[in-house]
Length: 295
Image (cartoon, rainbow, N blue to C red; front, top):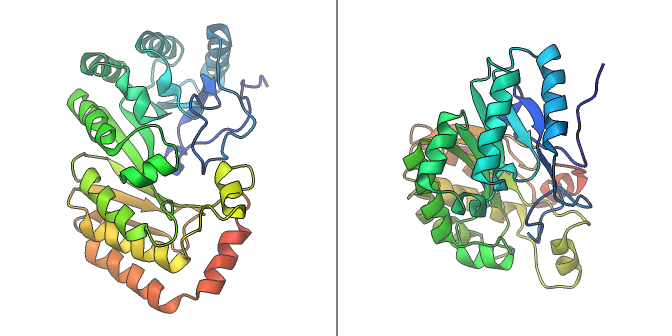
């Protein structure tokens, strides 16, 4: 069996479990977020077209009816409009049954593309991308060196809305640190209420030694939020969201697993958070956090 080309760490969201993975980039173009260790030691690289085509030939043999392709790498959407368009043509050539293409993206990756270009990419089957927004609070975004502000989240996601491209965003509980979770949640809700994410995916900050944030914790420059603070932060965010969307909190990093739709499931979700806040022990929750070896 021929092997596909994959370099370094390969990640995909849980909801992309049935998608065919295709490497077009490896590593991250930014690689400066303090909390991130997902692509540690992997420099950004664009896969040569010949390499991508070889992989597509192999996929066409083993998965000829692949219905969705997910491009791997931290943010393949950073590729130029022309390169993404050509990639879509190449995928269409080898996988004629492919109905949709997805990828990870940074907010800054969208900035370089006009609304008309985004519409064209939507026509070429780029119909759902995943964006690591992490927060909508400017203090948190700046402290964690995300490289953009909350207004950029609104402007770029509104462009995706106009182009008809669905997007999934991420919120990282605990990212603001001890004592700042409520502000982070309230400010983020105000931002997210101005966009239309298909899903909001919840991940709880889990700091690994490879990250810059780990060093800041050791030096006393950052204090992690307690697990109870994170649950209160979740409660505040869900209470303040006014949009229709799906909430996914079913990753290993979350102390409690939850899934729900807004506004229908708001009361149930808040009740689940309240129960956890009341019943769960901080020490035991922290033991679980420390036991996590990988996201």
